[in-house]
Length: 170
Image (tube, rainbow, N blue to C red; front, side):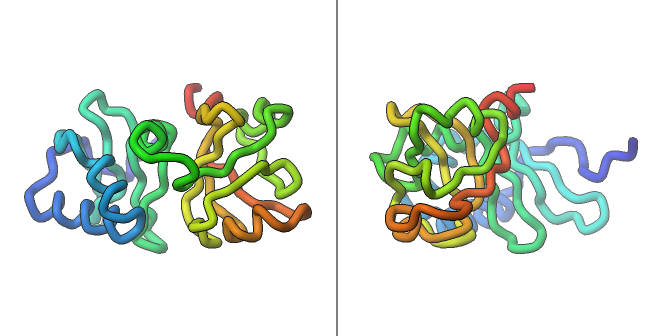
């Protein structure tokens, strides 16, 4: 299989400012500082465009994915844990019933009827961190409706899951 990304490399000062700027725009100043507090990570670029596509930790774990369509980051379970540890509840969180967490951990979508609470600051299309009632990470996904709607309506899909904790460990 052909690899479409370059080998991991250390970011230049320009690259560092670029990805920090995107994170600050998308997640806010405090969350951006949390994500990039260690300041030591690797990046991988697209072979065709030379644009940054992935941010990796020092141990080469996938940390953030830069989506080509929107030029915004997709969270991974590694970056979601950093945000959960550093930000108070309910920031970026969607809290679901413990009875459905095993399904969501393997990548099943989150429906409004299973939500206990959600950050009212979440907008449709934003990255959402899905946690159980004890604030343990279940997975990450993209919100299909706003956090306010998640708290009010009881029908339909709320979060399209990208990475469940179990699926991401495989």
